[in-house]
Length: 187
Length: 101
Image (cartoon, rainbow over all chains, first blue to last red; front, side):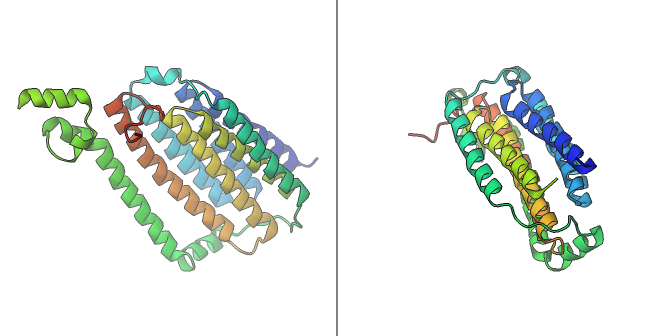
């Protein structure tokens, strides 16, 4: 058993343990921390697969941005409901479905072992050249997607201020019953 | 470390994520499970790129785009969940059923 196999086993245990923590814990904040553990270990797998740039991106975006966004949004809501969430009654069906998916995938993988070459990866320079020559249009579209998502998230999260200050407009479509009664009382 | 080891890890992560998507009620938990599924796909793409055809870069480029879209998706989904929580005081997906007749 060489060093990469030891590292791979260690990282795989961390990844799968973190993932199981995400889907079984009842506390949303704990689930976010388990997710962080799992995603950070995946960057180790990327390093083993000679993809250093992706390992960095994984740490920065998943470890830095996404987990923080999740935790931050949890803090903005009242947290007591999130410390003891309940699962669907259909969790047994879900477990059967997940196990059968794993069984099918595992059977296919173990029965079709592909001929592999020696492990290698592109240099950062090659990756950058490829991204800005052959993939430049998808790259620009991706930046557009990020911009639209950013603006959309701001508009969605800000809509309640508009709703409180002026009682006309788009926000009325999502109004609850109590809001409707108070509006009627005012008019 | 062989290719099928990485593939089995990816399959296990994918199955765990699918279980989370199906079994959870809280929208934030479902979002985290979707992240697990996306990461399983990323591991697979990078592993195939590294083991089968190291000269081509498609595996890593695709992974970069998946990560980008995942970041945009999390931002939007958290905004929607915050909105749902403000108007309905719940983040459970089975209680957000006003479009169901």
